[in-house]
Length: 472
Image 1 (tube, rainbow, N blue to C red):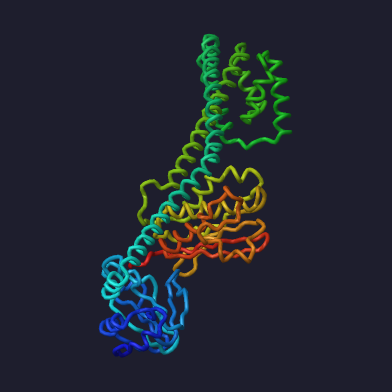
Image 2: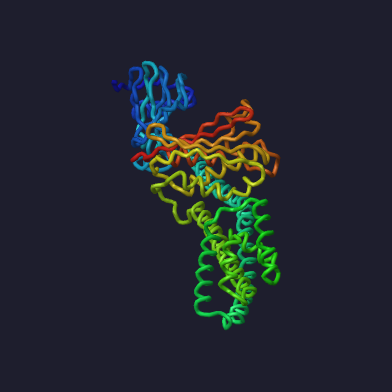
């Protein structure tokens, strides 16, 4: 590599400088140099301080971005006047900026090289109006990107709220019903035990308490009976209860049968109770039912707690920093938000590699990615199909595959699906921002990559995330 003075004639021949005056060309010659590079040379590297602005005079160059542990060629140029480097030096101090990609030569190449500070001075002095316009454009794009991201988050949360409300409604309603029934059973159980206690000896009462403990243990651990088996058991118990003079024998029989209690247990109760058998059987039945209702309330409350926990994990409120994240936690939290969809004809298949290490990531942002891709997959299948989520490791990356059995994405538009505002949905049904924001979260914020492979009946989005974020 050697630095020589530039020729005004050669600079004038570049489309970038063809409209400059002789005085302006003289200024460029005085402040810049021409550097020569052999093929396959990195002129500058991604993330290095953006110190120079380069213009191609002769040869061929490539802009290369390091993503997902691999070099991705962004563009190739061989026309004199193509430029790269500190293109945004006019916005602020070049020391605070870095090259967003690497500049690599393909052939023997000659480049005009100008310091970033000189390039900034050139633009501000020669083209002040253009600088103001570009500055406003960059600011406007940044603000629009931030607003679009926030809007998409709100849209995603709004779409999930109906499903979450539905999921919460079921256990909440079950809990209310069980609590109401529990109050009635407790009152009746107190009434019965107060009336029957004087008729029982200490030995009989002790024996009944043991039988009650046995009944509750069976109710909690006994395997569920088939409809036919439960019916036969109810008939046997009901007939014996009626014979023993128990009030509402078939109702009591149903409670005992659902708890897995058989005629042998009932005979032990009748023998231990003596003449008080009708009341003691009723009391034991109520006690078993009360325990069942408590279990139901506990289960419903646990489900509500699980949903609230999943929502908290999904939103990751106040957690915008990079932390050690298990991708399975985020996937499962997101799937909980969509669980009502899987009751309507969509089958969920999870093939997780639980040996995967945690990755350095922003959990809330990744959950937005999972939401956008899963929501699109569910919508594509139109209520019927299979959603498959697979996790694996490829070198220094964790790979998440999300596949659906929908109609697929036409080849003609597959290259455009990550473009902002591009959507195949009807007007008013899609913003076209979901996949664009997902790509920016994965590629820009997490230095990963999203790929799509689609054909009718098999569409797969592959998200690749580095286990450790680059230090720079």
